Length: 286
Ligand SMILES: Cc1cc2nc3c(=O)[nH]c(=O)nc-3n(C[C@H](O)[C@H](O)[C@H](O)COP(=O)(O)OP(=O)(O)OC[C@H]3O[C@@H](n4cnc5c(N)ncnc54)[C@H](O)[C@@H]3O)c2cc1C
Image (cartoon, rainbow, N blue to C red; front, side):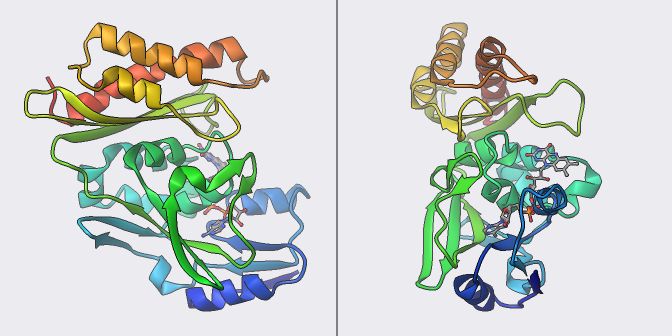
């Protein structure tokens, strides 16, 4: 196995493009190294992107934010402006593992590992985040929800590396929130999760919303019907019940030792309701 630590994204994509056999990007390594140790991944080449200075910063971009692919999750929780703008995204990133894991792991690694239960992804989808992908043919930017195409699978082509994530400037009176269910208090993988982002008008009526669920399908599930259920309302009980019903209807979970189909489906509705209420308060709704 060859290990390379380039210092520019161009070098990194060049190495990935020319690689023979299995080539993997290494960010925090908190997924990749576990898979290598258990024999599930056998790389011929590992390209460590943590030495690329341009990927290590959170910067303001077009009023929003650009989070470099090598930024550890812990840094998101230390960024006051990011917390103020996108508290739901930050709380999701800061639920990953433990302090030790967060000092290494990245939200881009969380995305590219392509687990349906990845914590940061529903929150980023709800927030309208995008992935900036660099490759041998240049750069392209796509919505976060289009990156993962199935469990463990992304749409990245040979030589492509996610360079950064972008979060838009939140419209006035916007709030977001992320909640997950795990059977213990931390260090566990979401059995079900929900991210909600909504924008209110001056009267506290929801005028835009995005709802995304984790661990209830092969990829993160967006629920446009859930968003429609709360748009035009002040998040009264009827709207919340409709949101929960839409989320339950959108679920296609598996049955496993961590949760049954029935349990995951019901909890998806419950978490979406609770996340919507938090997002509503954060947006300034009363
Ligand atoms: C003890 C422990 C607890 C954990 N708890 C949680 C949890 O609570 N919630 C949760 O969601 N996850 C959890 N995880 C999983 C893991 O920590 C996260 O998924 C983490 O965000 C992965 O980020 P990373 O930077 O370490 O990724 P890496 O391991 O470096 O990479 C993961 C995958 O993505 C690819 N990749 C990484 N960066 C890029 C890039 N820029 N471009 C293209 N491909 C890329 C890699 O090749 C690899 O296939 C846990 C892991 C451990 C070991």
